[in-house]
Image 1 (tube, one colour):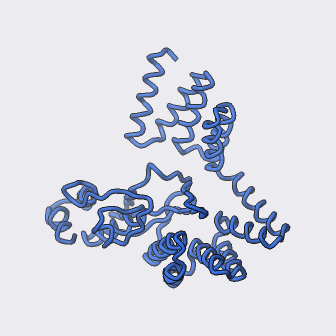
Image 2 (cartoon, rainbow, N blue to C red):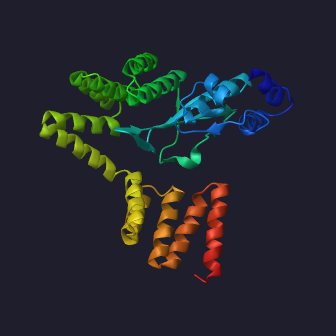
Image 3 (tube, helix red, strand yellow):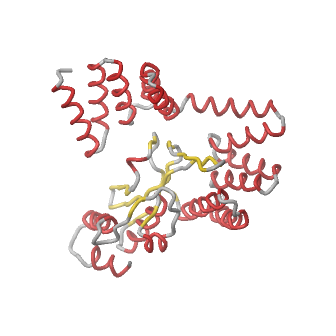
Length: 321
């Protein structure tokens, strides 16, 4: 990989750092280079990503940083804590944050993000140390092994994650889930509370504590954490976005429009909110409002997505709407 990087990125010579960064990104994705492919569950190290040509956002971030540093660029990890990204497998619900790579060139900062179109967030990325990236990698590995019932292996990765960064709230939350599976609810409670001490709005830790207290019959504390979860959701635009999507699936477009408007009221800068509102208005026959929402979505979207929105606007105009 170093040899290929040298030939395709470094040895070109005589170019600015911005041009070197452009060549690096092309090298990662073009078939003539690494030809990397995104896969959400591929928690790979740089070596594993190189061997398989696959990775999730963390694997891509680790690889980008390693390659950029080898190419003489100032690269670092960035974390986004509040994202709309979760999935379930079996009886386990996974909440995930998001990472990408930052590149500093003089006074300019650039982000290299393989999954930017798939992640919804209202927060800018925050620079993190390499130790945090290692903690995320090993915590994710632990969660994956935990879901497969391989508790001993999960415990080894969990311990490694906490050694790397004891300030990583999600690692403590995962450690709590592991303790529960190992039959230690008191230790699990300590770990969940530690996660909340580090991040008072950690959804997973609050949900896990509510469930733990429910199994104990401690209704007072269960309801306390469920109230905290609900209060956090009332301030979370992505909560209303998910409600709106559910409304659309049920064919209730009036409710969908209401929930999209509520999401936009909390965060106006996400083009998917406005596009969803446009869909709801179209189904309700409110074509002028649909056009306004589409134009707002277009103004916020990236170039490729903006072009798709423009095509939809053109179709509305051809229909005289």
